[in-house]
Length: 188
Image 1 (cartoon, rainbow, N blue to C red):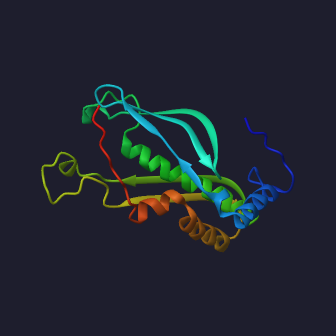
Image 2: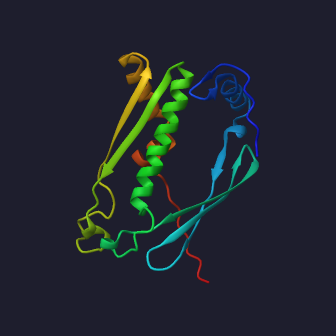
Image 3: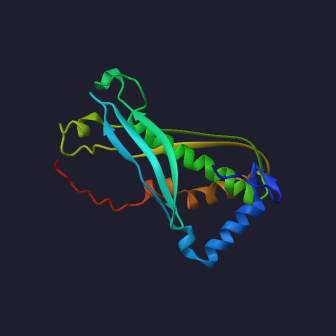
């Protein structure tokens, strides 16, 4: 496990000097800023799946991790209601990424946060999912989120923070712009 060493000014639990040092290293060597995330998901019966997070690579260095994420559908959608469904996990991933970005971007601006809450919602038309109407898309058409911030800052500073988060959140970026997805089938 990595040890966190506090070297400078702390804002929102983050060491600004340490963050600046990491950013400086990436400026000097772009390869140090390259991160590859990997997950594996396996069917666990009915509509349940379990995703494993075993490692990721940062700057060419593999870092081992050990997490699982379960997914299921509610009873009304033929699941057993044992875990969030994939759409809820997608929104949770967006919310978590936005929350992290609010904390980091606020710290970089010297803004002390007292509360961050992100609420998201979307509507899915099941006719697309079940292939009942070829004109109905199987995914979200729109996704809404509301960020609620309480901070020691002016409304203008928080508006600037909000815009910066939308520009720098990887999940916001991935959901709001086309992402190339390369699919391959392996038959066992």
